[in-house]
Each structure stands twice: as structure tokens, then as C-alpha cells.
Image (cartoon, rainbow, N blue to C red; front, side):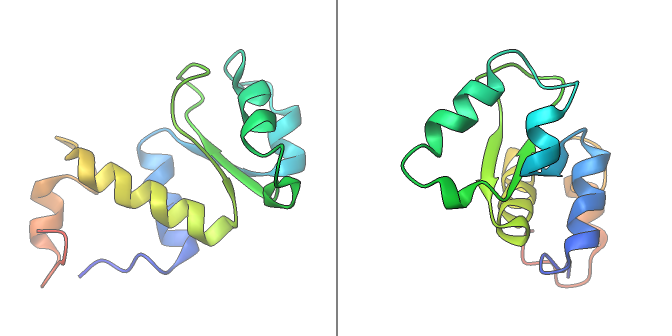
Length: 107
């Protein structure tokens, strides 16, 4: 069974699929931000600026692709769950790999 409570493991999954997770301060200065993504992040957190702690995004995407802002552990776990839900054909969260995880709740 895969453990989605461990940040380092979840970060490894994000790395495997090309996602980035950064503290807010690094996110706003990241050179690989898709055009318009920072504006979107500011807009979605405008009413709750306290959420500006961490950000998960797809550096290869665009302004409308994956973006979560908030608590580090929550947004990394939610992103991993979303990747699993997409059913990637390869990689550590693919069906073949999840089937190898004894008693995986995701298969």
C-alpha cells in the first residue's frame, strides 16, 4: 500500500511526473513559471492570502494547467491523488506499479 502521508515520497512522485512544489517566496521568483500562472495564483488567493505558503504547478504547462496553493503536505498529497486518478500509463503511479503495492487502496 502506498503511503500518501509522507512528504518526501509524495515529492518524489511529483518529480517523476514533472511537477514542481516550491515555497511561495520561491514560486513567485521561479524562472520556469508558465506565463500568466503567477497572476492566476494571486487571483485565486486574493481573498485568502494566508494560503500563500507553498505552490504546486506544472512547469511545462500553461496558465490554465495544474496549480494548487496552500499547506505543503495537503497540496502535494492532493496532487499525487489527482495523478493517480488520471491513470498514468507509466511511472511510479501507473496501474502496473500500483498493482505491485501490496493492498494498494488505489487499485
